[in-house]
Length: 95
Image (cartoon, rainbow, N blue to C red; front, side, top):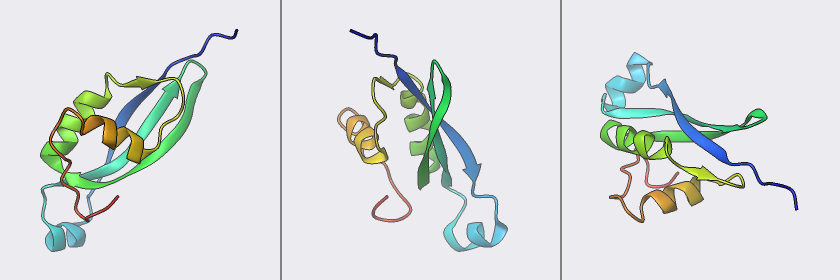
């Protein structure tokens, strides 16, 4: 049987940096993507909508230790995170 390789996940902050967006929504938000890494390199990116900056920091720390054998969706990752952590405060009600 072939050995399964683990995928690791890491947040990549990409904003917000638009001053008009910040004026409308406030500066307590962070958004970007999740970069997914494997032994073979960098196979995937997962969009990460704006969440409260405090939640971004906690989620990022947790995600740095998170691994799977298959690529998970954002919904799967967030569900696993929220099993042991408070719910993420998203800018919008759904992600």
